[in-house]
Length: 307
Image 1 (cartoon, one colour):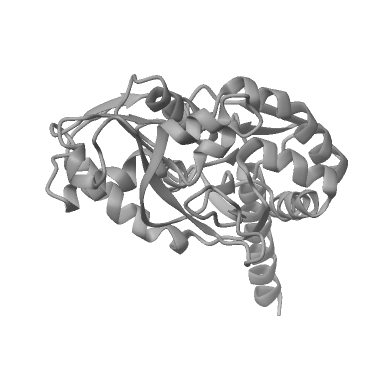
Image 2 (cartoon, rainbow, N blue to C red):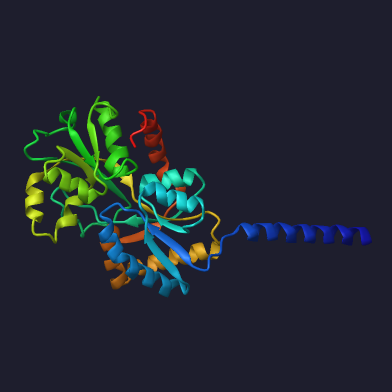
């Protein structure tokens, strides 16, 4: 009996030590660090940073600090070093971060699809995927993918899924060398890529569909639509994510998920997430949703370094 008790005591002590190790590895921040990616002009994001922070603090009952990353890579590095706990990661950025063990997708965004004129299809269900679209300056002579050979193409960044990963694969499918067959212009945001075409700095651009609507409140919106003409869509791309660092406390992960879902359900919150990334809501995400992205990234990597 004593021997049995000794074994049980040893097992209890081992379990306690194991649990202690586990809890030591679990991150329970006093202030939740949340970071946005600069997929559009940083000043636009900065204006919505504080309102989102206030809503998250109200939902979570803890201090929250929302900041804007300098670029995709900076956010991935910050999550890998646990300086940032929650990242609003675009599709490719999520895959890169997840494959480094730095991110776990808890939600993916929902949007209304849009037609070729940029009109939201609000009478149809929200979708968890989107398209990259090719637009071109009306005077460029570009009417199809094959016409892009040798042209200047504006993109938001080289880690953007709709701005580069899907388009580069599309060019390869049409026999255009993504590495040497075109000149890529890193415009630093989907809005800036549209402006590059509008201002004549680029012949064409790949953006999310329909990034031209980012200017719908501007006086030159109609001029942008008239100059930057729609050419085609790519195949569908899984939407961007709300991701957390994998070893964040489990309850806090669930609370963060619930907080974003609640924010999207409120009138005030919906206005804020629309202003940030045109999100219309969220649904649960799983890592396997992004396997096709991994396939496209592997192909992209075989072409060389575009940075």
